[in-house]
Image (tube, rainbow, N blue to C red):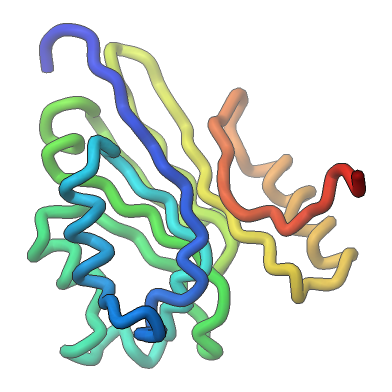
Length: 165
């Protein structure tokens, strides 16, 4: 790597990539991402089901690899909520170093850590379900406070009303 680099992120609530209600597929979604100027897309509510991980028609990781992306999807048995963090391989190969993605809260948060221009970065993708009870959401936020490194970049769908105006 040479020179100064920048990385562009976008956070989007997909509200169910498993759904084909709009006549578009996950492949179309990923193709649009590849055409964009963004380096990494942080998706909330991909609704990735555990039982679909190994099926040929819905193997998200294989599709991302085929389209030259590095991805981590969270999953659960119900196929509800979750998060996905997807990087373009060109970014991973030319702009950043030592990318590590970790599911830090099961089904609710993925942390991406990397080095860029000699500086360490931590970027977190969060989905806090509106179906969670207040005490469960509080537990999620307390856990994040305990496990996130200092000065992370955080984005996602928090399902919180901060101002009722």
